[in-house]
Image (tube, rainbow, N blue to C red; front, top):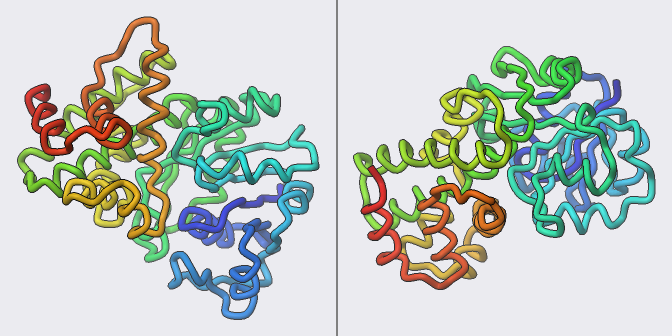
Length: 329
């Protein structure tokens, strides 16, 4: 089976590294032609995870999205959710009979759907050909070959196992799941909670409070996902709680970093310019709030509400988050 990765960021680079350990050839699409030329010459991505060195003989690099899709059986999308729509406008070949896995942690703005649902509804891809790659795992620690765990979710267990086997190594442990909707929503929501953790950190709250925040966050996540897709799941499993904790606490977390800047008084625009990287939690907060408003029975989500208020309603960050502390237990 021919694999291809679409995206040029940290996660795309980390996934390429994992696949190259198990595949003789891997397709890699990125729109940055300068980065492609650099990788071919210097054998590493100039912009992300620069310590990772590639055997370029194993890479089929291209800036043509149609070429990489045409030549692959299984596509792994690692493009930020906000940019997936514009990238797919260049699509000229069919996605039918392709297996699509998403490593994207967010909502597609054009449709307001998680990536799996987006591909199902917009491109008529059956759910048995759609999967999710989620943590708990940071791309930066994959680059350093620190022991990490991945959850691979798909309605078709055999396809999940194929991806899991091709991402596994001495330092990558994998498990499969059939909760594609739940794990994908969890991957989106944890970025909002990490952003909240960063805001509290920027405001000067300490570790004692952060533990309370994370405890409330996992319960809030459970309530939210249950409204979206009710099925038997253990919200304390690594794909949910583990991914939340690593994103909420890690110094590698872009969402926590973004939140910390907001808590310290940066405007949203200035924080985005300073980071020069995508914080998916910013886009996810709006999407999660919008989706929640459509629930027939509202889920109690004070953390999501507070983040949305600050980012999109110009709420006073100190006041809003002080009021949030009174709603947590």
